Image 1: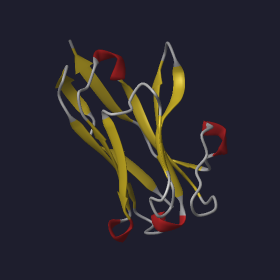
Image 2: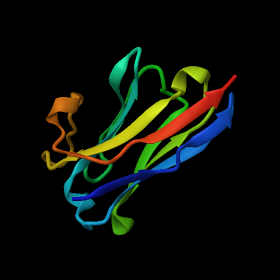
Image 3: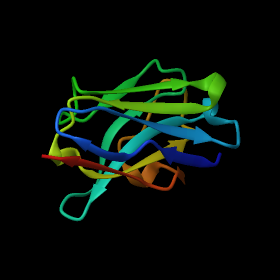
Length: 125
């Protein structure tokens, strides 16, 4: 699996962005995928995760109701739709993948074997 994250940018408070995590290796359907974000103050934290077939999802409390993780296995891509963005959402966002059993995902960054490069999201106040 070879992950490529994209979709970051500068947006005003209340705006929306959609991040994409594409797998050029075309095997993403075999992996659970997570989105993490990293800032100097908080380090790397889990934002959302989705199991192989989308049967299970996870959201950090700080993004529940605003972010939606989804995937299109036919396109080997996982998405993170981010709505009602706040300045505290500003971070570098990373996608990560792991071939954990179907229906499951990890919540710890150390459990993920494969990482994409980060994409910067900046929310201005």
